[in-house]
Amino acid sequence: MKNLYQSIDKQIEFNKGKNLFLDKREKSLEFIKDTILSIKEIDNLNKEQEESLIEYAANKALEEFYRINQYYYFDEEAKSELKSIYSKLIIMAKSRALIPEKIAETHYNNLEKWLLKNNSFAREIYKNKSEQLDAVVCSEYSYQLQLEILNLDKREIQEPILDIGCGQNARLVNYLKSKDYNVIGIDRNEFDKSYLFKSDWLKYDYGTDKWGTIVSNLGFSNHFVHNHLRNDSKAEEYAKTYMRILSSLKVGGSFHYAPGLDFIENYLDKNKFSLKLLSLGTSTINTSIVERIKQ
Image (tube, rainbow, N blue to C red; front, side, top):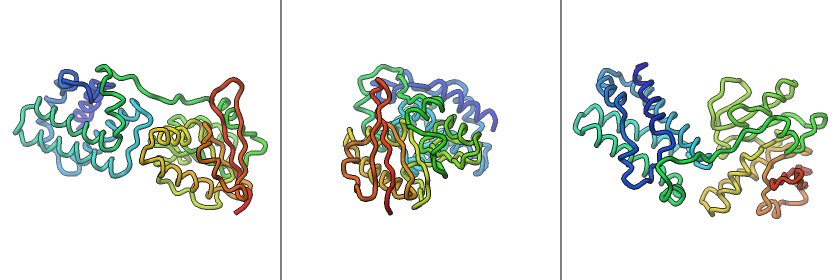
């Protein structure tokens, strides 16, 4: 099994940044020698081992898609479909009906169709790009800069605290936790700390009348803006989630986020929510603070 996991890592590394939508991509996307040699080992796997391998390969593929474009979104159904693609890959490999080159071609065609189904904008972005793609990423800011951008006063911040899209390093959450604040963070990454959770922010159960402070720096609202400007079908889901987040605040609690969302903030019920808009020096990023003033 160890060799199979290693071959997956090497294959993902070989394909790192490769453009699925490139014409004649078969010249750049192919199975490396380690992958071809490991095919025979698949015959000896039991069902549990196969499922473990599929899970590992799918997770590694997701990590690479997210690395290339942070705006890619894959719900649970999409993740299940991705596992099916890798399950089919194992079936093809075990059958020996196709040569490795044809297996690779079929597999990458399946990945392309899957990506287009779940993120249809991808082809328009990448169809005329080069073989190697540059990653679209959002840098993780220091906790000091996040405190400043989000206008968080440590002396006045209300608990409990939720950081939506806390980032893989969870810098703000870890800092607040070190100061004994009641705080948790959610993101799509895997974590090994009890106060950090892997979760889809569109599906997360925020509860009602629960949080003293919710924060999101270049996370939730950044993706909301991206989907809104594309007039994407996900924009409505983001709008509904935004209102669920506000409803999860306790009276007197506040949601601090950047960038702002003027296209939805203008419609907030002024009897229930107050809005404060801020800008940081010469930065083009504006910050919004929505406080719940009434149930």
